[in-house]
Amino acid sequence: MSVIPKLHQTVLAALLSTAFAMPAMAAAPATPAAASASSAWVDASNRNAAIVLAAQARFSPENASDTGLIEYDGLAADLGPKITERYVAAMQQARAQLQQRLAAEKDERIRQDLQILTNAVDQEIAGAQLEAKHSLPWVDVPQMVFGSMQSLLQEQRPAARRAKALERLQRYVGQYPGSTPITQQAKARFTEKIGQKGLAGPVRLQVEQSLENVPTYVAGIRKLFADMKIAGADSALAAMEQQLNDYAAWEKQVVLPLSRTDFRMAPELYAFRLKQVGIDIEPRALVERAEVAYLETRAAMQALAPVVAAKLALKGVDGSDYRQVLRALKSDSIPDAQLEAHYKGVNTQLEERIRAQRVVDVPQRAMTMRLASSAESAAQPAPHMRPPPLIGNTGEHGQFVLPVSNPTSSGKGEAYDDFNFAGAAWTLSAHEGRPGHELQFSAMVERGVSQARSLYAFNSVNVEGWALYAEAEMIPYEPAEGQFIALQFRMLRAARAMLDPMLNLGQVTREEAGRILTDEVMLSKPMARQELDRYTFNMPGQAGSYFYGYTRILQLRAETELALGDKFDRLAFNNFLLGQGLLPPDLLAKAVREHFIPEQKKARG
Image (cartoon, rainbow, N blue to C red; front, side, top):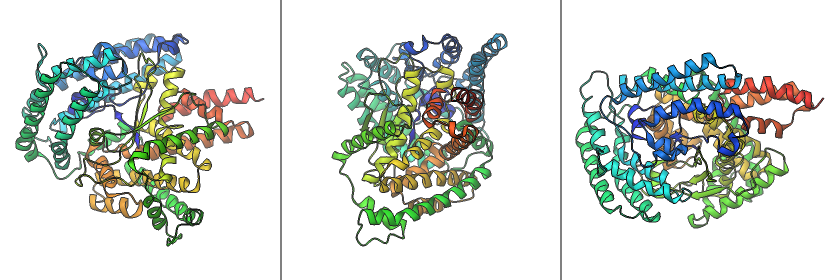
C-alpha cells in the first residue's frame, strides 16, 4: 500500500542502499513542457535540478530514463571499481555548484528549491558513506534487471523507447561493445569487501528469497520482451538467463554463508533510514504516538463492527467482535478474473463522490488500474502506484497495481485475502488511486511543479502522508463495510509505526510482531510476511512514514481550520496542498501559514 519509493532497484541504489533522491523506487513526476512554460521561475529551478540529474545519471542511467530523459534509455548502471568513492565525489561536485548558485540567487522560491536539492545531495552522500562503513555491498541483480526491463517495456512507452530495452539488456550481459556483465561487476564489488572488519552481510531471508525468485524474474523478463515484440533479443535473453542462474549459484556458495540471521542494522544506519524517509522524531516518540493511535483505532473498529454485521446480515457472526466481522467480510471473496472490474467500478464511484462533496479537483480522464504479474508481485508484493514518466511526459499516466499473492513468501502459491473482497476496494482505491497517489502525481504532472519539489523533495512521509489523509477524507462517503476496512488499514499503519522501530531496536521479535499483524490487525499470513520483510530488510524505517506523515497533515489541517474559522474551504486547502508538490512537512506548513491562510482571509473578506 504505497508508492514504490524506487520504480526499480537499480544496481547502484542497491549497492549503496540509499534510494536516490531522483525517482528510482521514489518517483514523483516532474514538470511537463506545457506546464513549465507558464512559469519562468520553474524553468530556472529546473536548470539547477539538471545538475544533480546529470551527476546521478552517470552512475544510474536507468533512473534518469525513468524520469523521462530518453537519451539514457539504452544505458546501464555503472558498478565498476571504487563506485562509492566516485559517486560521493560526483555528489560533492554537484553540491558545490548548487552552493554557488544559491549564493547568487535572489528569488525566494528558487532559493528554497536549491536548499531542497542541497539537502537531497547531502543525504545521498551520507547514505553512501554509511552503507560503505557498515554493509557488504550485495546486489539482488535478478530483481534489478527485471525492474529495469519492466520500467522500459511498458505499453504506454513510445515504441522507440521500448526498443532501447534490447541495448540495455545487451549491456547487462556484456554483449554490447565495451560493456561488462552486470553480474560480474556485482560479484567483484562484493568479493573485494569480504573480510573487511565491521561489514555486515545481507539478511539471510532476503538472500533466500532472491534465490527462490530467479526463475520468476527470468520468465517475467522473457514475457516482457515477447509482449512488446522486441526483435533480435534471443541471444541476449539466453545470456541473461545463464548469467542470472550462475549468479544465483555464486550467491549460494559465497553470499549465503556470509548472510546474517539477525536483521537489525547498525543503530546509526537505522537512524539515517528514518531521517531518509522523513521521520524527524526519535523512534521512541514515534512508537508512543503510534501505540495510542493503535488502541484508539482498534476501539473505533470495534464500535463499528455491530453496525456492519447488522447491515450485511452476517449470520452466525458475533457483531461485538471485530475479528469475526472481518473474517466474514473476507470470506465473500471476489474471483481474480472479476477483481479488476470490481475495483474500477469502485474507482468510478469514488470519483463521483469526490466531485459531489468538493473534496479536491480531479482530472476528467479515467484512472489506470490493473492486477500485478507474478514477477511484479515478487519484486513488490504490496499494492502500489507506479508513477508516470517524470520529464517530457507525453500523456502517460500512473498505474494502480494490485498483487493477488506474495510469491516472495515461504508459502509459495498462498493468495492474499486482504484486498479481494468488497469492503477493501474502497479505502485501497482512495489510497492508491483518487484522491490518493494517482491524483497526487497527476497534479504535479498536469499543474506544473519544479523538479526540485517533485523529484528531490520526495520522501515517504511526504507522499504516504497525503495518501493516508486521502483515505480519511473519503471515509464519510463510503459504505459501512468500506469504513470498517478503512479503520483496519489505519490500524495497520499505526502498527507499522510501532513495530518497525521496535523490531529494529530489539524490543520485539519477528514472531511477536507477526502475531500482532495476524491476530490483531487480521492480515493474511502472506501479507503479514510481506509486512515483516518490509520492516526487517526490504525497507527498514519506511513503514512508520504513513502514520507520521498523516499526523503532520492532520495537525496542519487543524491549525488552518482554527485560523480561518468559517472561511475555511476544504476544496481550496486540498488543492493548495497538491499544488505544492512533495514539500517536506515543515516547508508545507510554512507555505500554508505564509500564503494560503493570508490569501484565503483576503479573498473571503
